[in-house]
Image (cartoon, rainbow, N blue to C red; front, side, top):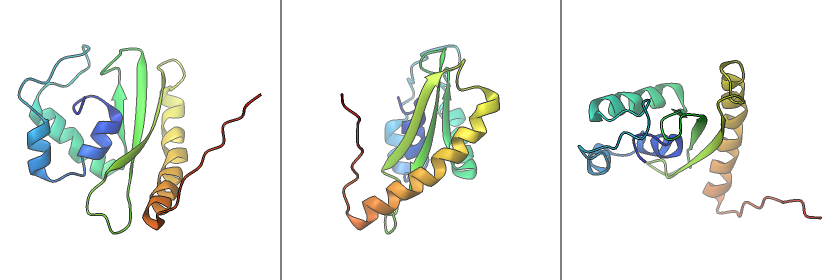
Length: 129
């Protein structure tokens, strides 16, 4: 959901205002007690995302889940089309670990942006047994 999911917020925060207006409809569903449903509140959060460089979803879709998303900037691209995210249980993505996780994800998102800009393929090895 564009008003609750960290990945969607990290992308939409960097879109033109007409795109945001089309996506943020007046009937934003309240998914949990933490979900913002006011368009003004969501747009204010988008401003904060642009300022701090990352988006969050703290109990906004499922109360026990926390998500962080870093916008992926691609050189020569006017808008953000991608984000890198991490989702975990609130008990593991604690306040103490939160900023460290953000700091660890930012350089990875930057690397991915460079790879996309070069037109290279990103291959991730998955161990098999």
